[in-house]
Length: 351
Image (cartoon, one colour):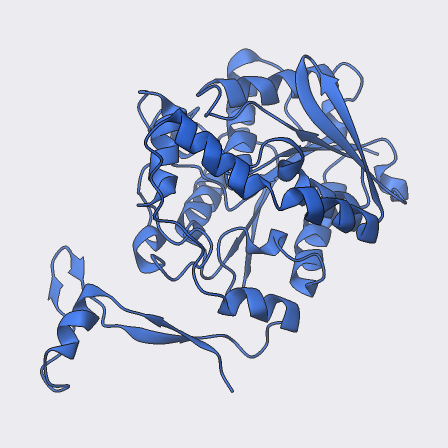
């Protein structure tokens, strides 16, 4: 039996008031209204991923009124990590060591076996969470997956989040760790990755490097990058309420963008790297899913990189919502994402 989710638009609600023959999509030169429809779960997903795709939308219409309410939300979202991540590390054979690098908190994630090609390499990780969620150990999930499936040493940066310090604190912390790492590891042996906010920070790090003149990493992997804080991109509309994780721009996501930007123009390239000069970027692999609210942002970044002469690859996974490839370590799609990134890095990094 096919699992479905019911998506109702304004047009569908109006359609219920009309006879089937008169309830038709409307259109103007500015766009179209789409009737409600059933959204089936594709049959060819793994059982592990199928459950995630079929799930109802996560809470999203949340609007913290002050810093105290933001901190309460942050603590509530981070709490499950205290039990889930230690068990995940144990299962995947990844050791975690808290550390401080250039005055910034970080975690060193080491797999039980490092691949021969990665013995002298470091993968640097910036976590997601709309610049405000997932501080501390909670932000290491994606780093653990990369360490396990990429079989490489990962440093996950616990940058300052915007309920404590808005822009440029997060980017400054990421840059500080990267520049300290350069003192002992050549740039051509460093790969940088992260999803959502982590993808935006990965791109902003490169823009900062171009601006300040420090060596750029050998390759980067911005997953579904939050590369534009504005509501720009087709799938902010077509995937509104379809993405069952990020769900909509118009909930806490927009509020988090305002909190992080702290009065700055959303189109500042250090906030929204899509507006920056992407010429000279390192080889880049991007990841998204066909139901990802940020799919258009990922596609727009890929096209601009290609137009800028950059070696760029795009992998898009069937039916996945935003960042969903980081949720279940048992899903074969999850392993495939990180093995693909590791292969891309291997082909472009020095040993």
